[in-house]
Image 1: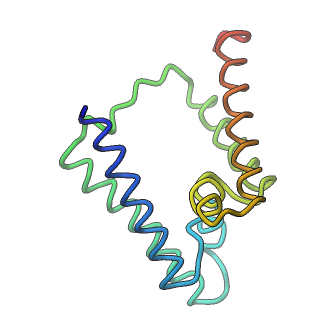
Image 2: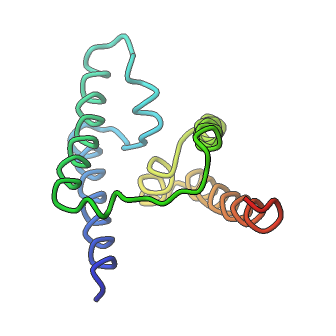
Length: 140
């Protein structure tokens, strides 16, 4: 197997274990957009575990960057303004869809939630259509 396939499989297993543990041990779904949105909640318990979750993602990325910096090299031919607009649109989409790829696509589909299955199908199709439109019609 190619190294990239093995890394994708290992990453998928780690994500599956982590999301399962969060659900079983904490009763929470690992929807990253909801976790980020709720970081400033008034309840200390509710925001405490979210801060640990976010810290864990950053810490894991920093550790991985030490061992495999090549995984973090990205050649993007887009302006900073374009990237910020795209990020805002993704954030708006997560609000419209009541969740993101991690909440719906990983956790919701695994729980066989029809709402999450429909949401995942919708945002995957929308993403593919928009990416092809921007590349082949607009020329970005």
